[in-house]
Image 1: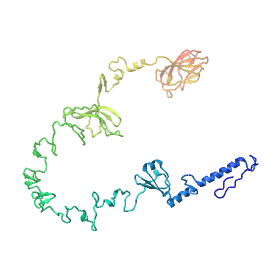
Image 2: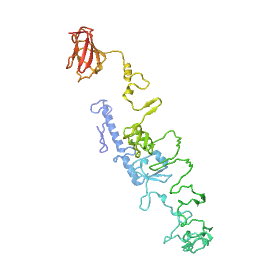
Image 3: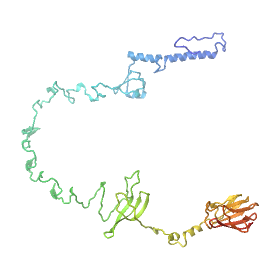
Length: 471
């Protein structure tokens, strides 16, 4: 039977001393089932440690402890809290004894709960921004204020008297900021600007040599006696200038649309010149080395080795126009000859294709001499139509039938093509054309087994058949 606990008590049948082990009304296995059901019902009612079942005794005891204050506050070091990571019941307070930080339980583990914060409108989330009351009016602390918001007299140093501060230094000449005699200082009524004053300014006996605002406004046109430099003619002014023998030991960054280097010799230590370094995920710039040539009478032309971004090909050109930014106009340019060692690459004519310098025979003749001279076979049974790949082969027919030469419109054999036909069986082979009749005598049949014939194309749909034939 299933347990009826806790709604009502179970009524468990107990066997007597004379009850048989397998008595039908109360079997041995049923007794165990009844006992197990009752035990499980009791365990569910009691509840496990930290049970969240609201009907368990464990859950209800925790609620009573929370409401009564029993075991509400627990404390330990921050390290132990973190390592043990216990469950903090709802409204239960945990304190870190070494940091004095607190957490208020929610039924989750310690590490999953945030620290409690103070949130009244007059406070921030951290008490570190506030001073304790004991620091008020003490050395290193803060001053106390009276009802008017002023520092109380007892906390003002004796050397300072209230309401005796200076309002202006214009007419005061003694004991200002610890200076015994300030009569030599310029007051607001004595001097407002140094433009017209040449004596006794800041302790300088004669300031006639000083530049005033009416004497010099810029160094652009001044070349002598500027800042103690005897001759400043070599200095660069804002209007421009030149520098002789300048050495820069650090990195040099030049910004602008055009950089001109006017030099006889350009000596670059680096072995690699890096161009178009800012062109990342695009390929739109022409890249290369471009130069100018020509004279006044012949006109200004340009030559260079350039990678054309439009087709990604390197081109050696001349007679080109002035580049437009990073774009080369390849219209009407001359493609130059490139000489590499003993090889000269330029325009190649039909004659040069046939005979290159130092070659004693035509290229096609040499290629033909390299062809495989061994005869290849194509073995068929019967009823076969020739293919272009059968050129220069022996086609074997083992089962007789018709060997068909295709029409010109179907398979275009070159004029002069030749094919051998061999009858390897006893059945006779007949040679025919598709839409035309080949020329042969005395007929177009192979005479017997091992007879052969040669097929040669002499024109469009014109084939000659010669060999061991019969009518």
